[in-house]
Length: 112
Image (tube, rainbow, N blue to C red; front, side, top):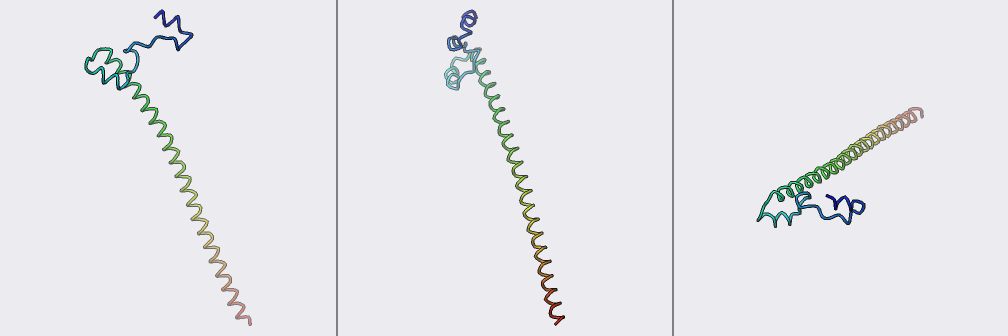
């Protein structure tokens, strides 16, 4: 503990953490499986906690991305329905214009 305190200003100079205080790599877990110890349990625990935290973080990132996709999909759906409504209004306008032309032609024929 004294050596860590002495080098606390220089993180690169810190001695490596004991095996039971840091997450083990998969290679260390494989190698240590032949002579399992309490330190092995602790290293595995740290590995699993780190893995769990990374998985949870990644899940939250994916959830945010999916929420964004849902929002974009809803906005696209709304724009699509607006286009449908524009086409319906245009077809109604065209119908009214066509009826008006027919009415004016019939009226012109009756007048003559």
